[in-house]
Picture 1 (cartoon, rainbow, N blue to C red):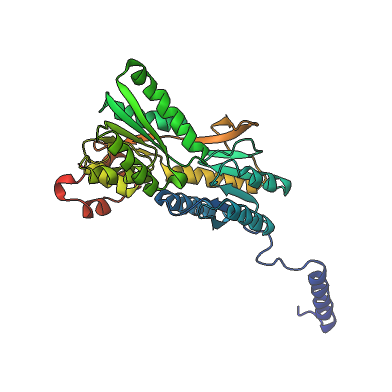
Picture 2 (cartoon, rainbow, N blue to C red):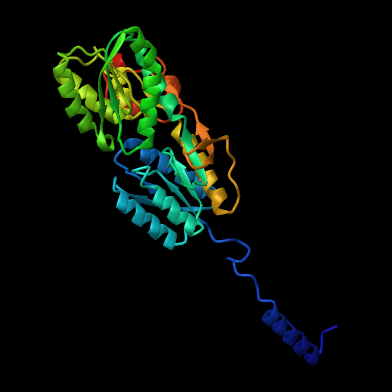
Length: 350
């Protein structure tokens, strides 16, 4: 039966009133705004940091967050200003690769005063109220570098080529190197003829200072324990100019493309590979958890001198000529085509 005009009018009025009291859900309602995470980076001038950030951003976005990058270009005051700006923009969490690890404590203090959780990535910030740390056992890196070189050069003059004196990681690597070398020094098999520190991890600093050391020791160098691949590159340049390349064992860290090529050319002995994509992805998961007010999953904790900090620790792997294929190439960290383009066929990895 067809409703009367009066009934139809009544129903229409009822629906109109219902719309007033129970408005239809907008497309945004029922879904929360994406949390924004700030990523404070020391510098993009070192190859590995772009890899870290790309992996972090990809995973964070998969988890529904947005990421804002700030590159401090090695400037502590700029990094502090960038932190303040991101906090003022209401980021829900901060992750930081500090330039000066001691000075970065003020960034942690600022974040905590504003209720913003903060994660230190790769470089621990001592004596601060950090919420979380994602990185590796840095002392173990130094030990791995030194042990790899003593395996091929168990005697002779050694040079320790360190990173930035403002980076706490550089000091931990140095600690690991000295720990591994000490038994050889005590036996008189190895003599450490120089300990060189390179501000901002600059390859030019490594090249310039090592050139002087080579001259003072009349070329009698058995090994150079270089703390990363940038300083290793500076070292190899100095060795090449003195016709010592391939004759002196050289370590590194980060598995940069240039370092892998040097390893295959026999001018660098090894590098330390950290599966950065996996580590950065775990950092993103921790950051998103903190942004959502949840405690991240940790694999342990580490003291920063003030408190034990929950942490995720990634593995470290020694890469040399024999395992390039099964490590950095297998993981997709380095591209076989790029490597082959830089080398003659007889130097390609097998």
